[in-house]
Image 1 (cartoon, one colour):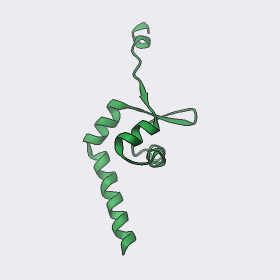
Image 2: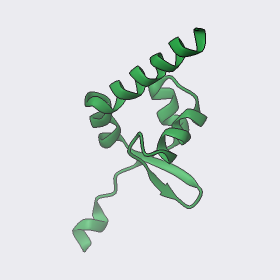
Image 3: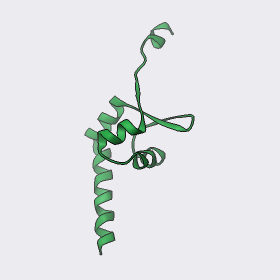
Image 4: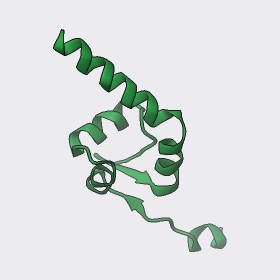
Length: 78
């Protein structure tokens, strides 16, 4: 238990993740709500582990969101 308490990973805020990804904080919240991006809800706020978001970016999670967004943009133009 003592070992568990001694290691505390800092959690990122929605604003920090939004800045990192170059998107709005609202988009980050929506993705977290829809379980698109790995997140933890603490009270009424979303928090993110840096390592999990990095892995998500490297894996297909971010690519899927990007392709879905591009598909929606193409459909909106038609």
